[in-house]
Length: 160
Image (tube, rainbow, N blue to C red; front, side, top):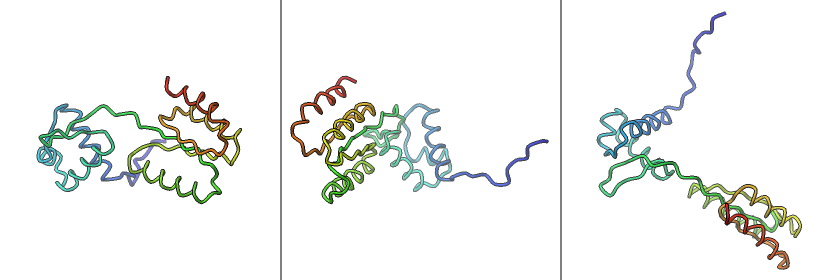
C-alpha cells in the first residue's frame, strides 16, 4: 500500500523563518546587515529583527560593531547546580524560584537538588553535581562539618 502525503503539515511558521535566516547566514558565511537579510528572505523586517535579536541572545549569532550579523560556533550552555537546604523551607523556595528565573533569563541550565536537611544527602547531591558536570554549584547546607567533604567532591569539577 502506497503512503499518502499528510493532509496537514505540522510546522511552526516563525521557527521555519528563523531557520531560513540561520541557514542563509551559515551558507554565505559572512556578516550581513538586517536590510540584506530582509531582502533575501522576504520575511518582514520586524520579524527578521526579532529573530536576529533572539539568535544573538541565545548565542547562535553575534552582532559586529557595524551592526552586521554573523554565525558563531554554538557555545556550550553553562550549567548551574543548586543544593537546596530543604524544599519545605520558604527561604529555600524563594532562592530556588529566583535562581530558576535568572537561569531562564540568561539561558543557563539549572539543576536543583534537595538536601532535605541531611548531611549524607548533601554529599550524595554533591556527587550528582559532579556527575552532571555543573560549572558552578551553590550548596546550601546546615552542617558545617561536611564542608571539607563537599569541597573535595567539587574539586573534581575544576579538572573536567
